[in-house]
Length: 121
Figure 1 (cartoon, rainbow, N blue to C red):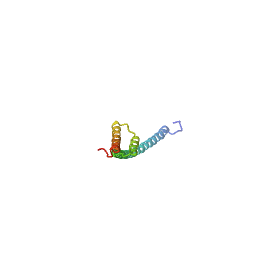
Figure 2: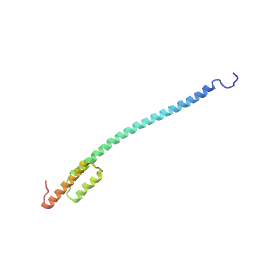
Figure 3: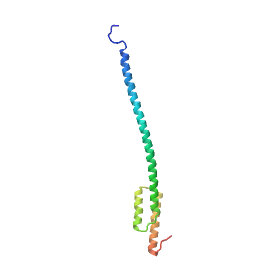
Figure 4: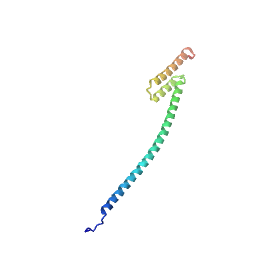
């Protein structure tokens, strides 16, 4: 051998590249595992938030129904129902009909009481 270099210098250089590639792969694998754990935490938090949202939506519907099922005795009471309707942000036809029916029933009772001194049944 006339060269003064090590006979396996090429293999040693390849080993360094191999080790570096292995380290980068391990780092990428660790990062993927971290992201998977974070994703699981986020999914859990989202599920809890969705349950909370559902409960709050149910409470909102109950509160709206209580307002619509309570008889208004004055213009101020009718205004309460109108403000509740405006805050509801719905365009559901059946709900609009329910609100309108509630308002009409209230107005009928108010006018009957004003005209005859007694509420209609």
